[in-house]
Structure formats: structure tokens, C-alpha cells
View 1 (tube, protein in one colour):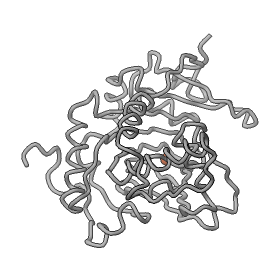
View 2 (spheres, protein in one colour):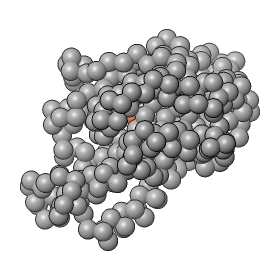
View 3 (cartoon, protein in one colour):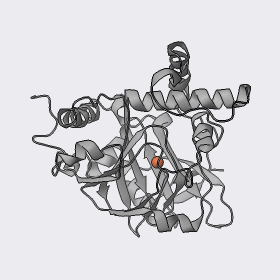
Length: 311
Ligand SMILES: [Fe+2]
């Protein structure tokens, strides 16, 4: 295909066994995204400048670690490269969201990546694919949580330690999955330090990607360096059915007091088509993101924590 953004395979060490492992176990592979030239600091800087304000999420935390309140930021008059500099100095997370919606060459890359997967895994048909770029400060954390869709994390620069926990009732209660799906929680889940004894721990290096089973809880801790990562999301029919089943069960439990509904993602238990279509519409709205009006700081490469307050 000559529409390909990159020549050759994007995943460079795929083996037959990965078809069976993908989506069911922790899978760590090598990728060639950096060779595309689309994720150099300069390219990310330009992407930051092109990103529509509504898709640029910038967050930080109070330097007082007892105050866990989030602070919300804006780019201000910083250039893209200055923004990277500011994040390198501070304790800041920048989410460049839904890149494929407003940067067509990244949409082509995303399509190429999933065509490659489908070429290697016949039947792996995906939809609602999403690509974002996450730029985060040295030592930044992403707390224990689970996601509702298929997820993969592709490291570009810096190293992050990813803790991946088993998908059992011990680490993520079925009732909590429902809560996440019904958006009754901010997706932070009860966490105990001893969970780590059961985690698969991956120090994700530039040029590596990792993916994990649906709903498997995870948390991330950056090494002491700026981190640039690409996050990808996808849905398959199975992931969608599982979503619909859990969602349906959550509704049953809440409205009818049904105690132990089945979570088998097949057969008669799959939520009826009509309800599924309703969900689809509802989710389209949810996925558009939460509109945060409050802005606390702007990025500032000259300030000590990489940010200065907005009055
Ligand atoms: Fe996640």
C-alpha cells in the first residue's frame, strides 16, 4: 500500500504467538514509531501548537503533596518546544487528545498500525480508534485505575515503570468495573501497596509498546526524566459486547436489585441491540471529554515548577 506513512513493519518483533496473547495477557513489543519523524521533540512541539485548545489537557498538582487537588493549565504564550521544556522542569501532565481528528498524517499512521495488526490477527476488527500523545514530567504518576476500552502504550522518549495487575476480583471488583462503565467514579480504584507483589512490572523503554487485558488495573510511575508516550485505544466487537453486558448488569443491579447477573460476553446475556445503540449515542457524548472551565496556571519554562499562576 503506497498510502503507508512508514515503510516496513511498525511492530518489528511480532511472532505468531502474539496473536493468541494480544488482549489476553500483558504483551510487550518493539515498535518503530520514532523512525517516522512524527514524534521528535520538534514534531511534538508543532503538534502542541496545532492542537485545538479543547483537546489539549494540561494538569498539575500543588507542590504541597498533602493537597491532592488537581490544577488545570493552558499553553498560554509558550511555544510547543517551550511547553516541553516547562514539563521537563515541573510536575505536569499534558494530554494531546484525539490527534487523528485534526492531524490527517497521524490518522493515516493510526490506520496503518491497525491494518498491520489486522494483517497479523485476522478477525481483529477495530473501531473508534483513538490516538493521543502524553507528555509528562520526571517522576510523574498515573494512579491505579482501569480503562473501558482496549489500550496500548507506546514509549517514545524517557522511561516509565508500568505496573500491570491481574484482572481478578481481588484487584478489580466486578461491581467496580460497572461503576467505571456507568461513570459513577473518576476511575480511581481502591489500591493497597501489597497489590504490587502481584503486578507485572515493565520499565517501558523508548521503542517499546505494551498492551494488557481489558479492564486489567494499572498504574504508571515515570523515571526521573521527561516522558513522551503515545496512547492508543480501540474497540472490537467483543470489547463492545463486554461493555454492554457490564453496563446492562449495572443497570439491572441498580433498578431491579438483581444480585448476581452473568458477565458472559456472549449469547442471550448480551444487552439487546436497541439498548446497545442507545449506549452508543450516549457514549459518543461522554467521549467528547469533560469541559473544564477553571484554569489555574499557564506553562512557563522560566518558572521553577514550569508553570505560573493565572490571576
Ligand atoms: Fe490507563
